[in-house]
Each structure stands twice: as structure tokens, then as C-alpha cells.
Image 1 (cartoon, rainbow, N blue to C red):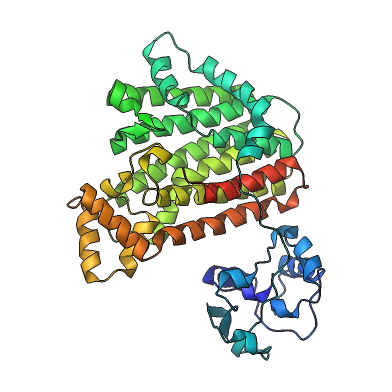
Image 2: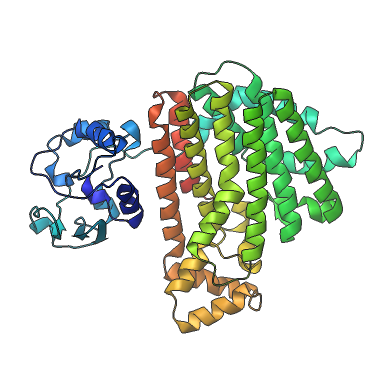
Length: 452
């Protein structure tokens, strides 16, 4: 990883765990240094130096190897301003900022003091962001999954299939079961167990949506009237329970205790996340850390489980299991970040839900957390009243959108999502390149770029 990518505290904390110190080396960096870096960390060795991008003698070779071993190379020109980054080494902490004079500066000395870099952009074309490759590689398998869903949502009680079908046929992305199918292709699994498990994943997700709509009092879901509006809250909750039960039936039929542990554990974490979100509702003091904790539980846990079980049924190594888990978990965080950004950035028709739902429900999502932190006292007075439910009119929503735009909170939320999507993509580095991996990479980019 080139040094000019270390512009955040998270990278510093990661390196500190291995006793790695930042330093500048005099020799030129080659593509092979990428592997030496990971070996050093794996062996727990410290005092490894990092090279600024302008010291790369072969950026093309480095670019070609950028995804090996999960190490990424980021063009700092795009990350930190027009001319690069500048920072000061203090112990293990590198604080970075933009500096338009960097192009005129040379390489700094070892140890503490000023560092600067002229950035050489790494050659690469703009990657595509599309869900279409994922839809294409999973189309046949999703037909099998949909058949399982239709069969298992049936009941002698007519209200159950009627209410479940209202949501299941409502045009959702079905991204979670697709992750199970795509993951199976990625690891070369040729069996059929993953079809029922993918259906179980979708049942768990659908059950949580039914329960969410009751808790939130939602009017719309996927562009249609929410089930609780048509069938009432009691029936919606009970049918959600039915779908949870069907999911566990499918898990038990699979016969793998490991699969059962993964999916049941995810179900429990989702419930904890929803309760955590409920307790954080209308609390203006909710921190970004608390917010991320909530979305990792209520959204990312199922993405991770859906991805990981592919490796389990294929009897892959623990490393491959963890890689797919990491892919799904980071994808889930990115997906939820964008969902929360869209509530202040897209119209209701595009999203399939009421715009401003989060605002009216007093949810402290990242756009609000950022806007509140950066606002003046007058703006904070508005936010405190809004989150408490005292300012919830359409005019108040429009004002909230204006404040969020003023502080760039939607774009910064998307930027955080891009960070997690990049982590998801990097997690796939241990798998061979091919249609499945490319489709999963594009799905991660799509999760960030989408407008719905």
C-alpha cells in the first residue's frame, strides 16, 4: 500500500496493532513490494517503510497487482485534492490535508517532520457499476430459489400466502439470495443445497421488512402500500413470524450445524440491531460509531451470512469463508449508507418509499449526524426539534435537505459507502478472476452508485 493512502486514523490503528511504523525508504518501489508488505505484517515484523507514489518506478506493474492479498493502491490525487497530500509523522499518527504546493515539493527525510508527495496517477480505467452481471450469472439459480419461496410461503390459512406474496412479489432487488448464488459460483460449487439456503435468507429478510413496517408505521414499501396498511399490524407481525419459521425449517433440512449457526446468529444480530436503532431513535446525541454499530447489525449481518454460507456448503477453507463474510459485511454497510443518503437525496417514486421517512421517524442516520455536527447553533436548534418530532412538516423536511446539502453530508455519506464497497471488493482478492468475481465487484460498485 503506498504511503499517500494513509490519510485516516483507521489505517494507522491497523498498522499499530502489528507494531508497524511509517518511514520513507530511499530505494525505488517495485510491484513485488506488495507481497513483501503482507509477509512482514503476517510475521509481526515492525519498522516497515512505505513509498510515496512518486517513488514508484513501475506503476503499471503495481497497478496490475493492486488487488493481490487484499492490499489496495489508491490514487491519492483523487482522494486528497488536486495536487496530492501532505502530512506530519508523529508516532504512529499521520494527519493529512490538501496542499496545492505539493507538486513543487520533493521527498522528505526519515522520521518525524514534514512529508509531501507529487502523485503519479495509477493507470486504470473507470470500473463499471452495474447489477446486471449479478442478475445474469444468478438468473438460472434464482428461478430455483423463487420456486422454493413460492412453495414454502403456502399455507392452509389464506391470509398467510396473500400477505407474504404482497411483499415477496413487490419487486425487491433480491440481492441477499443472489449473494449466496454468486458466492457458490465464485467457489466452484456445483450442488443444489444453496437454493434452499438462499430462499431461507430471503425469508429472513422479508420477515424483518414486515416487522420493520409495523415498528416504523410505514405507508409504502417497494413503491406499493405496505402490508401493515392493507392487512393491519397484527397480521403483518404474525406472517413475519411465519416466514422466520419457514427460514429455520429450510436451515434444518440442509443438515449443516455450521450453516444453522451462521444464519440463526445473523437473525439474532438483526433483531439486536433493530432494538438498538429503536433505543437510539430521537436521540440527537447518537454518534457515528453508534450509527455504524446499528447498521452493521441490522443490515450487514445478513449480507455477511448470505455470502459466507456459499463457502460452507462448498466445504471451502476458513480463509475463504472469512473472505466472503468480509465481502458481504462491507457490502451491507455500503448498501445501508446509500439507503440513508437517498432519504435526503432522491424522490419517493425512485426509492419506492416515502421520502423523508427517516427524518419524520427521528432516525439519526449519517447525513443528519454530519449536518448536525457541522451546523451553527441555529441549525442545531432546528435539528434538535426535528429529531424530537416537533419539526416534521414538508417545509421542515425541505429545510433539512437544504442543510444537509449545505454541509455536503449526502456526498460524504456516499464517500463512506465507497470506502466500504472498496473493502468488499478487496475481500475477493483471494479468489480467481472470472465472471462471478467480476459480477460481485460490480454489485459492490452498484450499491454505491445506485439512485434507488
